[in-house]
Image (tube, rainbow, N blue to C red; front, side):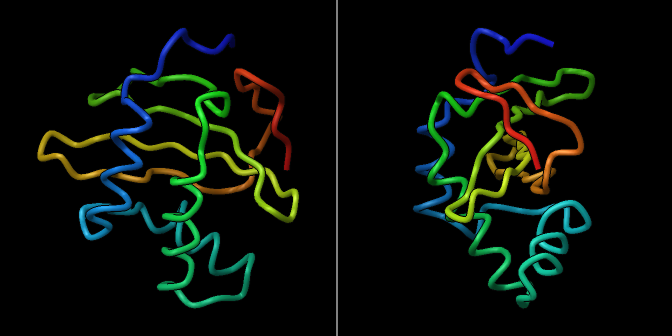
Length: 120
């Protein structure tokens, strides 16, 4: 699948929300904080901070696609952390303005972003 021309959610706005109001970010635990906690052997609070930090480090070239099968649409990004590990990141902005992080885990298959291919 080719990356869409533009994400559904403005990345800079999402990052401002994460930085200014981290309590407005909610997680689908089984595919986000629990994965990071297990892989990094950290507590859930540290896993949450790791994910919030990663969201703030995304750049537009990390964008892969927007999924529209369910409302609201969810943007997918592929990102490499400082240890070179690839991550599949999917989030959406809920109608009440909260950010829902749906996925934050190693990619199950190569993920094509605007700039590269992210692998596990």
